[in-house]
Image (cartoon, rainbow, N blue to C red; front, top):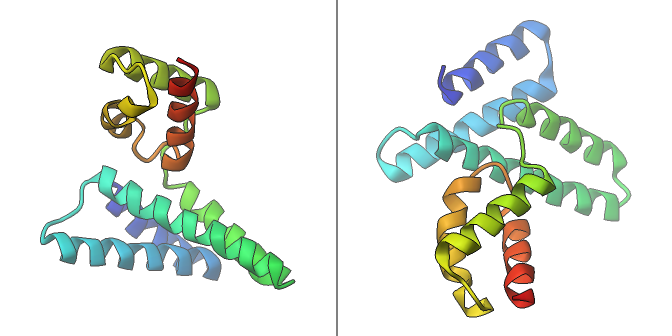
Length: 149
């Protein structure tokens, strides 16, 4: 079953359960997927939908930080609940050890020896971790590894 179909099924389940938070989060995500499909003039593949969902999760994390700065804990809690809903549709994130192993393999495969070779490593690594790791975290680990070389 495609990820888009799972999201549409999630809308039906949230409607039946009367879960307004889940319903809102999933509907917003589906509209973001539809907008991306319109922009690309074609239906999105599951990997692209994962990126849309990850973007939504990232935006919600940023909103939580802002709400907590403004002492709006109830809004931060709502955003956190929406994150939990969206994460149920996402593939499991890579743990630190698996990510380190992928970085080491990409460095070895690309023959990178210095921080100037970061582009070569990232070109190999990004498709392998797409949707399962934060790009900034991957970049940080690659920089550390190449600086230590």
